[in-house]
Length: 236
Image (cartoon, rainbow, N blue to C red; front, side, top):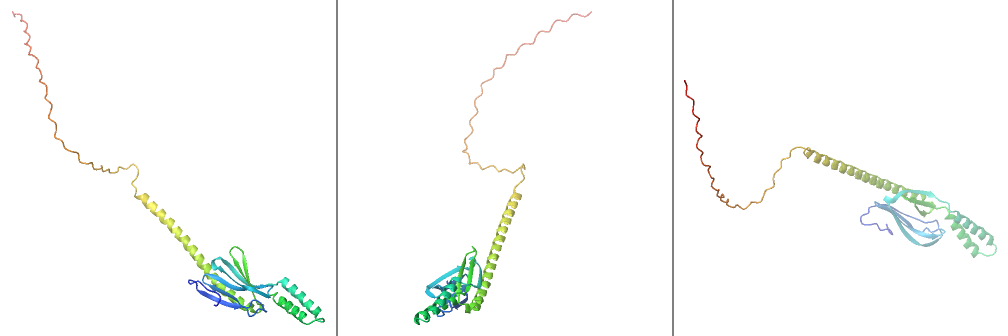
């Protein structure tokens, strides 16, 4: 749609153009919704009568809580327009141009005091309002329904993604516990004899054995003669 440029990764879902007020019918307020955000360009006005340029705003669907369409009563515009109307009727007898101008301004204010409003509410509770002509309320409601369908699909996708993340985290914890249990079962019981393998020693240099030390000669004790036997007495 003219006036709104979507990013290359976005898919346009719906778009529509509206008149901001009954009087400023030649100006257009553009609204569009894509797969990622809600965007609009609206006409800024003073009291709904005097145009003051255009502005573009957008909000991501992930941060949008809801959209709604209702009819708002602008009391300031109504009573101000009513005052201009009474003033114009009071001046009709004296001049022509001034009462006609006042009548036109008063009618504009009164007609713009009852716009159809699209309210966009974000997750933080803040709201943004887009006003269009009361005659295009049905068209605005149709666009709001398309936005609601896209919001439901986006929120369902977010909930599914969060659910999958929770499941993946649970599976990761379970796998870690299983790995720890298997590692604990593979360890030998405490106190069991564990085969030890001595570390290989580096080869030692071989040296020839030293010759035995000479033994000192052993001295033998001199032999002692046997003692003489005593004489035996003669027998009778």
